[in-house]
Image 1 (cartoon, rainbow, N blue to C red):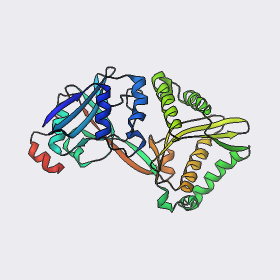
Image 2 (image 1 turned 120 degrees about the vertical axis):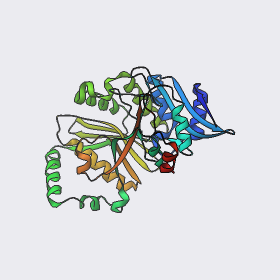
Image 3 (image 1 turned 90 degrees about the vertical axis):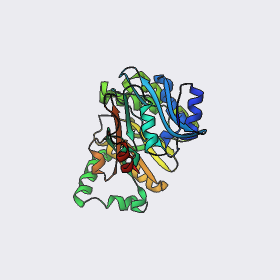
Image 4 (image 1 turned 60 degrees about the vertical axis):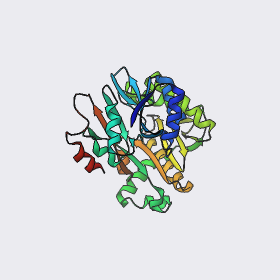
Length: 320
């Protein structure tokens, strides 16, 4: 086996598209490139190869702000990466060890989906928790989903929504100009803690929206109350999964976030999606809405400690 580090963007794309499984929206090279084009992190794609075959793959970027390697495309917000459903790709534990040994400086991999190979790395920790909705659990019936709540909870939610229904509530879809309102409302709500307060992140989402629109995968959902925009969400549809990417709400209308999220759930039942991904970040409502948690994991090392214990054979046996 030998390790190879690719830095040329054309070669990196070729290795990515040959090696990285495409199961979700974030697996697409074009999606990740929307962020890399804005952040412009140097690429360092590590592979372990044998007889011309790639046995392990670790696509990294150098983050000079935090002085460590992070996963491609290198997007960060408040010092943390954002894109989810990352992977540790290796044929076996030995390849995992070889891959990580090839990284010369500090490393922080976030939002890793679970694989037994993570047991090989002593610095593996649970990161954040993502939340999903599976319409099939409720036989693709929103009414069945609604009845999964207690009578008290249903009554409380109905009363909250009725306060909005006093006004004229309507929806519109796929008005591209509404994305400007999404970004501005998000910044107004979260100020310096908004993703879009960083111009690089803002530009990344503009690029992402343009790509998704051209591919027919973008869904923009806007709630209108009277003649005012009360909420806007940006989502993507790929391989029968609906992923909610970003949103903004008007503080003038308390409860509108619940209204738009219930719309997403009802629509996903009608469209018979396999799943709806609301990503990480609890914001309190996801558990209350009976979404299914999905823990994601991280690997972090300052290179002062090994990634695994001293008895490599014992560790390999545990990962097998």
